[in-house]
Length: 241
Image (tube, rainbow, N blue to C red; front, side):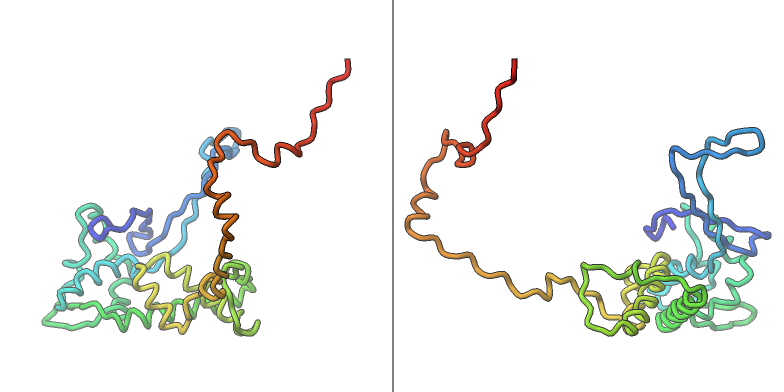
């Protein structure tokens, strides 16, 4: 979204704007493909995966939610830089799922919505929990992806493994939400922030005091003096004629 200060990403609407897909390209300058008898120089791999449209609508709702009033979503989901964002409302699951992240109020024949932080956090938490279940069913190892010698842990291996799944899933979901929501979600999941060893290590010992002789030597002008190591460097052997 341009108006909201997010970096542009590539998405695709398919099946008559009913489904939303995320498009990611992985490329290498030295790859190419054989297509029939021809060589395709563009060696990028394009991955197209379904995406919940609420992730893209969420920033617009959060922005309008600062006004504290109910509004029609077609008046909220607007972006001058990316006018096609209004097509998100055509996705089959969008309007039927807005209650997960917003309060709803019907007036006449119109439905109005207002961003709900509480509902959104619960919705995100369920997303993480479902992802954990999916990762476990597929026996996907996530321990090495989240463990690091940079961090210190004092929990049992079983507790660590469960935390690894939560942290990994939280990290994946965080790619689609703001940093503030990511931190709030971390707290809701009961995950403490990982601490660096530097914060837990005892303070380093104070430097030893210099003796009077050492202070005097430190003040000597060493310009033009050879380092001590130069007197012990190996001699260069003469070349045999």
